[in-house]
Image (tube, rainbow, N blue to C red):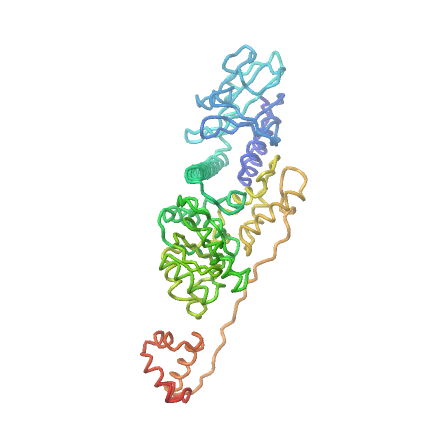
Length: 496
């Protein structure tokens, strides 16, 4: 190993690794640094996976577009990962421990060093030499360990990052295995697109995982469900997941309530071959349910309560076993207060209500989701730099996951090279925060009678003139409300 001072270079390397929380960048930068100071033919960077297998992801400072894997215990990287100590062989062609490794025929000697933190091996660095007189020794191991000791902080960060990423990968794998098991066992029919890339529920943030875990718990129950949240947060995806986790044998169909007129939607749902019949034994997802008319809301409520419906085209009475999942971008509670959504249907759906957090409320998930959307289905993976991640995290994402997905797919196509810089991303509009200066109101003299009258009129306006609900909100009887309105001259005495 070269003995020249490398403290300045190490400080720069440490800063780079700390600012780029990505395993490809980490192993590429580290292998490139050691390749430069060692002067040897090749320096390889292996990531050690949870199952003990190893993945070659960098070579001489460059990330591999197609990583190469070795099974548990295979090659020097597998041996070192298992033993948790460095190993070198100055005759690799005759060394049985070094067999089945990834090396060229010209390699004569190889040293493999574990990258460890708190007793866990997260990767290995393999130095390969083509020199026939090259003899690695314990002094080489000591020199390399000194370098890794000075990189303790970035190694610790990478360990935490890989733990989180592996956990998310494992959870997703288990979910997909369970979905496949349920699909094979019950012959579940799902609407087109259920298992495409849009069906991925990606995230590590606490508030997101809490919603997913709650959805899993309620899936096995037959309660109606209400999913609320902004545009693009994944409400429809989660609704389909609930159907899959439930094990219901019938179909899962979606009615987009905002896309059709009242008569069209009525026929679409309640005809003899409509969505309600298709979902019998399964799940009917009512997307944008707040757009339905009172008439349709009444029919949906009747189907929920009685478990039957009469078809609009044949007048046939059909028994139903349908789970309804309502989806809304706006709070239905506000629609109930405004009188545009039936209170009984709301409370039926609200038996279980889940609010999916927006991407702005899931800052920790932006990087994970961006990387997933960037590289999903791509043969060659690209890497987001720290500057790009910072730019993505600072945006307020009004379109949520849909917007992020579209931007990542566009960026992949338009960007040459492996690394995505901040400049490669589009210029995002800045969130405008309007600060309203308090207006000092001048004193106006009026009586308590006038104050009461103004408040009652404002309450009626807010509730679209519904006197029963207004009386309830005001804490008085309906008769008292009518008396007061009569005293104000707003209604005739005969209305009482």
